[in-house]
Length: 434
Image: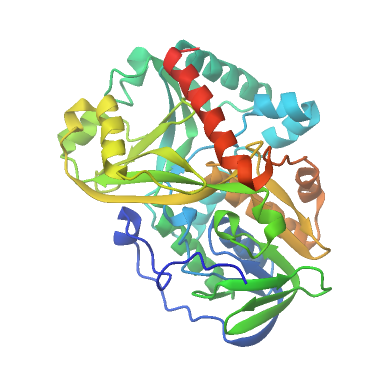
């Protein structure tokens, strides 16, 4: 039996998002045996996207969540709608060839479009705003952004605009950056309220959600897969596993493919209008181009939400606020002493190639995982592709499932030290500007 990964009663951990979440209905745990057409495990973005697409197509869907909707990364992330995968189109082309590069290029804007469509169609109140800025600290960062814009334009994507130092001041009130690029089809929002809105939309389409129902085991080889919890079971025609970093020991063959990595965030006290205008005048969200990056944005109530740092294997620094304050002061020295109201962390699933993984276990079990820190758009897009496959159209699913995945060198014992050494090397390159 896998060890529980939901501490306490599975309530939301303390965060700015949990403190400002919309009210949600009581969703009782799974009780007794249930028979359905499709069962989805995990009520984060991947599971919600899959379930909602299927419900809209008329399928009977039961969604099982170990804690609460959006409890994991989907309710704790930076809230940034960043188009593309963690692995760049250039790296995908170099590693897998031109055909795979062209296929992925046709997908990279889809996740953000799905989010905006959902928000508009279901009137989801999640403070969605436009604009995502990539900030360059070194000349190599600028060259990478120029190459990215050129490559994306080759595939007909004209949403990226390069920014010189002066133009960057129109987006970020800081002298730290020498230039950058804005994605006009990026943006940001309140991630937990987006998840809660998608859950309500799914239920409005006839879907059923059972919270506080950690999965103990799954039978992936049966013709009709079976999901078992402490108090019930679901037998289904098709099963979709969307646990990502929080799947635990339910599926060892999936868990060993990825590594949990923590990222840390904090939210300041509300800024004055003058302070907000000074630090982020265009109200776009920002991430810098370093390997271990800073990312930040303004919330709807003018707090600066600032994130960064990593904990390979899922651990956290001893002093999250102290670490983030130091990082924030390098960007905005005038905010060095500002009050911080919320500090939190969460885990994402890192794949060795930084490319998400999609595939089957057995004949009727589907999965997607390993977004590697770019899960907001990727999970929404993958949810649509998973739903297409369950519905009977496997063209895009089969193409992505055929992309090879690579294990971490040395297996689970060595994946953390190996990745830490790699991160140290790339961080050194960032510091040296090479």
